[in-house]
Length: 460
Image (tube, rainbow, N blue to C red):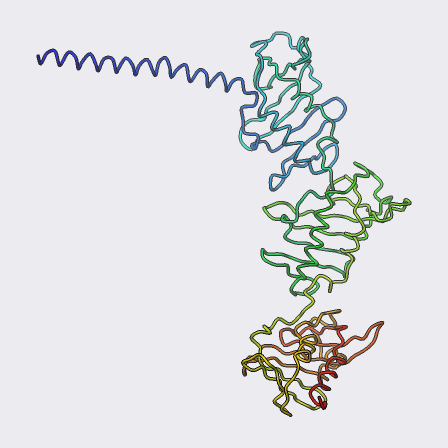
């Protein structure tokens, strides 16, 4: 009985061993063979991201591509231009997806038959890692549906779908950029505008909001700068004028009227754009000639963008210099004409004057004070780091009006006004406690404060 059990166990183990051997030596071998055949049928057997430089060689004009920073590809010959990411991706995808349809000849003795003895078309590739290689393109097959090809690293002649070789033969205009800038709003993290040696504006967005760095360090106007960013991203709608020229002067690009540089996120390289002169053709005067500094292509830019880039620096900064919380603030001290008037807000949110008289005040009067302070707008910046002379010129050594805002006895902020002058419109100098900068506003400060005084000291 014991012997029968032992024999049965041995037989079972033998069956299992045989099964395992059959799996590894027959079925597994067959699977590996199929995988190998599939791999061998795959035309490109390397990572396309590993390519850093390649040349599409053709009889008329070869095209040299080079991978730049941030996975951006550039054409460096016969023209200097960004490559069209869409068209290049189509080429790479077709290379990646193509299969070897047939291995025509493992060891060809005569390449002339296939047009591969002296091929007119080929793609030479350099990699980050690995030896360079070249794909040679020969004649079409007799039925016209396939093309003979071979790798420089191999002897055998292959056939692939003709669609791949057609794309490899396309001219440079297919692969070049279609626009002076190829980006979206979210890519932009900085803008520098140069209009002359002494007129430069620099703005940065470190991640949350825009900030002017030059000519002053000041909060940016979010609405206005986002408008500019949108106009820059809309350059995707520009029109190509010429692929390459030896005469930049005809476009005013030998001595640009304006230069702006766009800094980009995600490690992408900065883009410097030269703006030349306005088109003189009838019906096209809303356009300007422009090009990237290190590219050959010449495009047009819309006048709306150029006008925006030429705005005064004040247009790019936050127009409201005061930021105290009106809801938290419950006390205002107005000083003017030798008088000090104290306004208090009670628990019911009603305002009244408590000094030098005791009187209830309408909300419209308080709103006029807000209009001269919390909501005042900057029209010009008079002096960023003012000298004593500039402070005196502005009349801010002896302010004519001063308003201080409190939460109980805690000062939140104050604003002081100096001299007034008229240039097409009334102007007044002012400064706030938050900054030493001297500003100019066209808000009707004097008229509004006079109405406040009438309310306080009048009979109403």
